Length: 80
Image 1 (cartoon, rainbow, N blue to C red):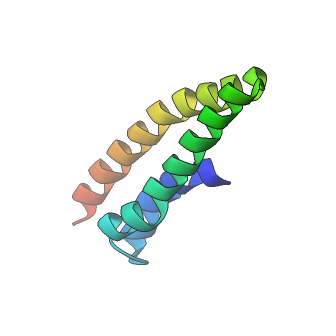
Image 2: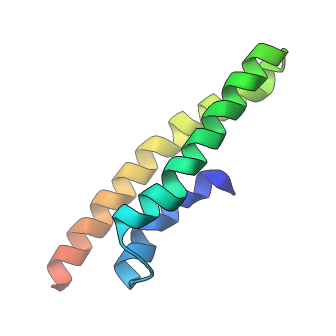
């Protein structure tokens, strides 16, 4: 659930729920911090398997999120 915040922020900003700037500070950055802290704590506590899952999920989610934002930006620029 926390990792899905960044994926839905740009479409939510396009619809008018809030600005992307506000969503970044109120949702995306705190979610990234929570995942980062969880990753650090899991690595230090010996739960390396869970830390690897968080790391792999972050890497796997970074590229599609950036691609989706770029596609939405291009689509939005054609509509206006």
